[in-house]
Each structure stands twice: as C-alpha cells, then as structure tokens.
Image 1 (tube, rainbow, N blue to C red):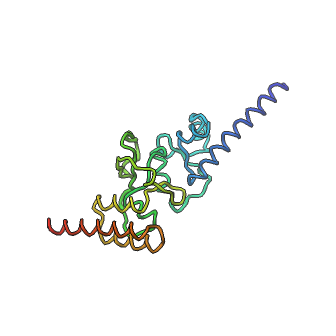
Image 2: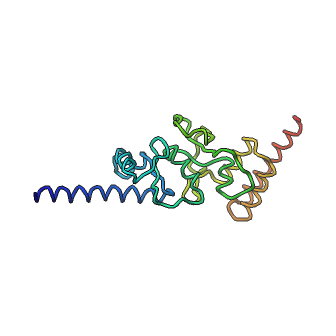
Image 3: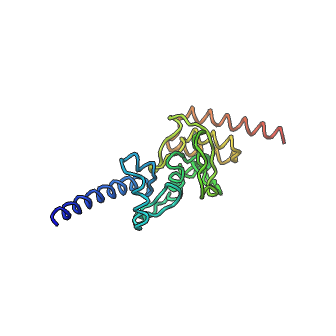
Length: 204
C-alpha cells in the first residue's frame, strides 16, 4: 500500500510539473500553446491532447490549444492566428499595420507570412490570408509578444499588395513621429510609394 501511495504521489508531481510548464508557456503567448511549443519545453505533445480531453485546454486548431481559464487579450485573434500556424507564421501586411497601430486599414482576413516550405494547415484557414515568403531575421520584430513584420517590411509588403498609398503615407508619418522608423528609411519608402502611384496613374 505504501508503494502505491508513493507511486501516486510522484505521478501527481510529474503531472503538475507538465501542467505548470504548459501554462507558463501559454501565458507568454496570450494563452495559446501548440504541439511545437510542447516539444520545445520537453513535454510530450500527447499531453496537450490529454489535457484537452480533461477540459484543461481548449482545442482551437490542429495542434493548437488555448488555456480557457486565462483571460482573452486585446490581440487575441492575432495570437490565435500565429498558433494556427504552429508558431511558424508572422503577422504581416495590413494586419501588421493594425498591430503596429499605424493607419486606418481594416483587413477582412488576418494576413500571415509563412515560410515558402510551410505546408497548408487544415480547418480554420478561411480566416487567414497566407503569404508564402522567407523573411530575414531583421524583417521580424514583436509587438505585444506577437511576431510581426517590422514597419519598413510591412510598408513594402503592403505596397506590393496594393494597399491604398494614402494609408501607407499615413503609416509612415505616424511611425516616424513615434520613432519607429528612421528619417532616411521613411524618405526612401515615400519615394517608392510615389513611384508606384505615378506608374499606376499612367496605366490608368
């Protein structure tokens, strides 16, 4: 009987340790954790499915979960979008403008940039617009602990994607005023925007 008691005690400690590690990682990511995260912290991904079956996690996508007792945050939708990509995605394009709080764009879907080699995910993809391209380390930053393209990279991507030049100029003005963009960077980007606007006018 004593052996069984000790076995139960240590099994309980082990379970608590797994739960604590899972919750600690989730707190850092607006309440979300993925099977990829689990491997990174030394937890068997099967434990996430077990915790979901017991009601301690909520499944939000294939391999992506949320801790339901944690409060939702202002950027919860963007954090869930990154979790849906198993942490491989970066908020980008017009959604990045929103996260950086620049301009007044209102994209109908959340834009995510994923590596070119990344395979499509399953259910839920209709909520997102994926851009398959490889980003340099210097093109990625974090806002509110969410990976996002830098302001300069965001403006370049939005320009290529056809965002209203007025909105991009507004974004540059705000970013420069807030010290998020150097004057020479802003000047170079304004030149690109003006050139694109001039060429568009000629074609029209």
